[in-house]
Every structure is written in C-alpha cells, then in structure tokens.
Length: 244
Image (cartoon, rainbow, N blue to C red; front, side, top):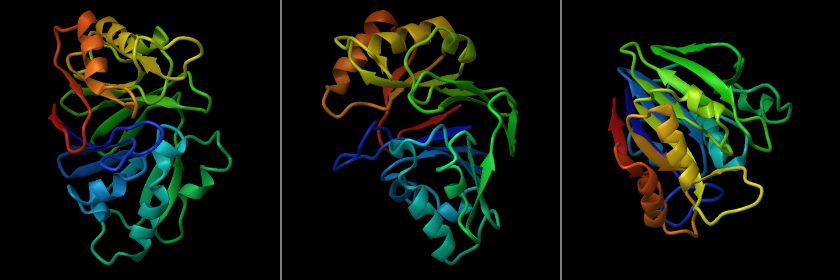
C-alpha cells in the first residue's frame, strides 16, 4: 500500500500547498481519501484522475471537499479511458445537503457508507470511527490484503477511544492543528495529544497532518518528539510518499 500526500493544511490553502487529500494505491487500485483545495492539481502530478477507482470523504468541511466539484467536471469533460465508467464518491449520509451533491450526471455517483459496517473497496478493507467534530466526521482504518494498516484520524479532538481504533497502525496520520499552548474548546488535536495517541495506540510510524498556517511546523514536530521519539515521525508535505 502506497500513500502520497496531496494536501496537508487545515482550513485553507497557502501559495505553495493545499488542504487535506491523500492518494492511496494498492496495486492498480487507486483511492482518493478526501479532496481539499488544491488536491486535484497535485493529483495530476502523480496519476491521471480518470484512473481513480473511488473517492472516500471523511466529512464535508470545505478543506476536505473543496475540489470535489472540479474533479466532477474533470470526469465529465476530460476525454480518455476511465478506470471506472462512473466514479463512486463515498460519504456519510447524515448531511442531506452535501451527500446528494456527490452525484454528477454521467461523471460521479454518491455512495453512502455505514459507519458501523465494514466497507470493501477493491483490495482495501475500511472501518470507521466517529470523531469529535462539529459535523459528522469519521476516522478511517484501511487494511490491505497483506494486513498492513493505515489509520487517518480525520478531524477530531482527542478522545481515548481513538487509540483503540488506531491500535498497531503501521502508519498513523493525525490531525495536529495546534501546539501545546492551545487551551479551551478544541475540535482538533495538539501536538502533545497527537504524541499521546501515537504512544497509546502503538503506532509504528506517524505523520502530522491538517497542519496550521501560523505555527512553526518544526515546533509541532519537536513537541511530539518530546513525548515519543521511538518511532519515525514526519511532517506531512506535498508529494510525501510512504510505502507499507
């Protein structure tokens, strides 16, 4: 299983990087996980978007879905051989406004997932965990046929059950939007909470994502390493690839 980071900021893109999106490849199966602002342009550097087999959305905040519309236009207007005749876009069905918009005639079709059930996408087995966020949001655990495990927290405040969901992940990708100075109500994790999650879950490798624009990312990395330095830890950056 190969992961490529297509965007990693939370909230809004900068002049050099987009918001959340990942390309996950297992053999000739290609899954786009979230589709934030700038993700389509970066995807085109790695894969013809017509070769996607599916898109999976963790929730409907714009920094995770902003490029869904232009991806639909791409599939409608771009000539070329398609991996699928109609691209399925998987999302939760609790949002009655955004879920239906995943269908675009002759291009994409909305597919609802049941967060309490297992979703099989080609060679990938996916389970879900509801997170703590203002809108329905679901962390994902993706397992390939070799048993390798990738867990993405999606957007979430820290809660202890997330560690159980992420147990023994070969790769854990966390929402690390705050440094350790953050106090008060939080819908995302601090660097210290990310480190606690990595330790509690027994993660084998960690990527910090959903990063802020106004905090030094090296500071976040240093704060994580103060708690856990026994595993490889990386800051997400555009084009970063990891093979499991």
